[in-house]
Length: 311
Image (tube, rainbow, N blue to C red; front, side):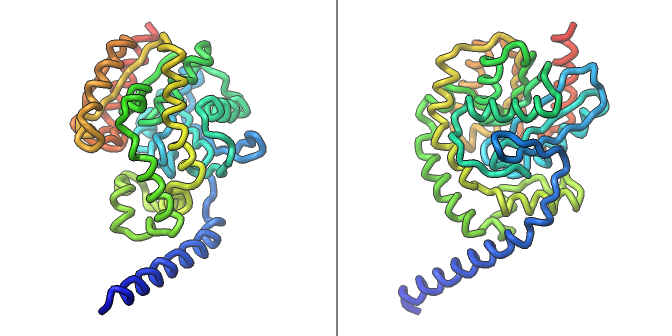
């Protein structure tokens, strides 16, 4: 079989996959029924999931990492252990979960203002303990800088901070995101051998939750809004760096295993940030999605942390 035939077959395959994917996105649209509140923010709909009844406790606000296609399900293994004692909110910013896409700039101040507006629209005005995962750390730190009267603590779930982006370690990741965006637009995430690599927590959800999250993966994987965030990563990190370290209690939950994936710089940067912020730091011998791998341990650390800084 000649190289020309192979290329022609590959093009035909990718075209067929793309057509199948785009048709099914329209069919699946009616199945994407939100499990929380849809709130209008700047003319678009943002999804916020809220659970728990303890109105005396601060609201625990979960902020997802970059490209997390279904945050309300992504965080479920952890927050389901906390709702008996606390109220929780998972904000699915634009481009994530059940929320709309947007072409508005993805600078950190805009993102924070949108998420904050969604909470305020639901009558939630603080006090907040922010629980950012990965890149959500930049948003959490900026939120605390802008509105220190609202944010009383940060619990970072293997969270990133400015030095991670400003140290020159992610220069090639925009190109990787471009490739992933193209393949996702074509629908290759529908193949199970690819889906398994980026969707590790199916066994932690009910079959219905898994099916809903799977449809959100098909729709959201590196969509245009999430992709736009990669272009702002350095600028957003610099904005946070330039405005100083917020002074509030911080608990850092840090993955040693993630250092093997992203680079050896991860642990020293986390330790340096802990020293600079006087943060408590706890290490985990598990992957970057700590809230899925060790939710029980994290829930216990959260309870102890909140008890300590409220005394």
